[in-house]
Amino acid sequence: MRILAVVVVLIIVLASGCLEREESQTNTGSTELAAKIISPKAGAVLSGGPVVMEASASGGRGPYTYEWWSSMNRYLGSGSKIKVDSSGLKKGEHLIVVKVRDSTGKEVQGSVIVDVV
Image 1: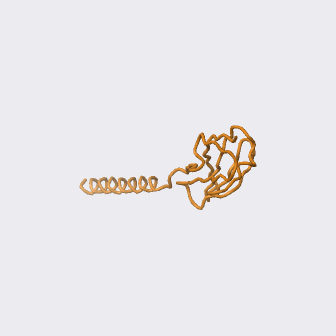
Image 2: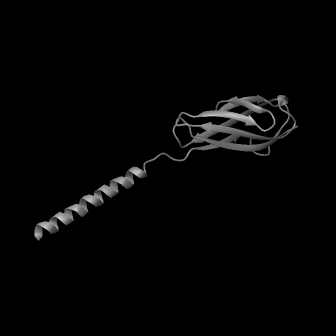
Image 3: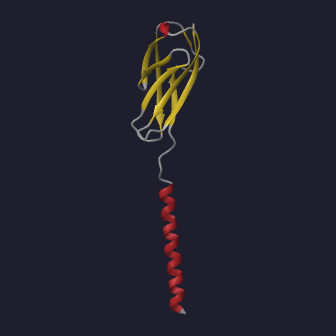
């Protein structure tokens, strides 16, 4: 009877150790991929001349790729920081979108609305 009790206790101890290891492995995953437009700020008024568009990414797995798009002008360029001549943009309200992709292929977007006059 004593041997059976020792075996049961040993099984419980081993099982609880395995469960703890599984939990710690689950919690060590990377954080969620996120994109943030640094420039231009939402509501900015662009009126000719160069405009710097800059974004940052966090989480996921680097390196990251960046693509910039406008709702009115379509593709604007690639890279975390680009320079666009706003005099070449159509006048009106633009939804500026940056698409960020990490090395695993996950993709997220950030966006701002700006006015071109």
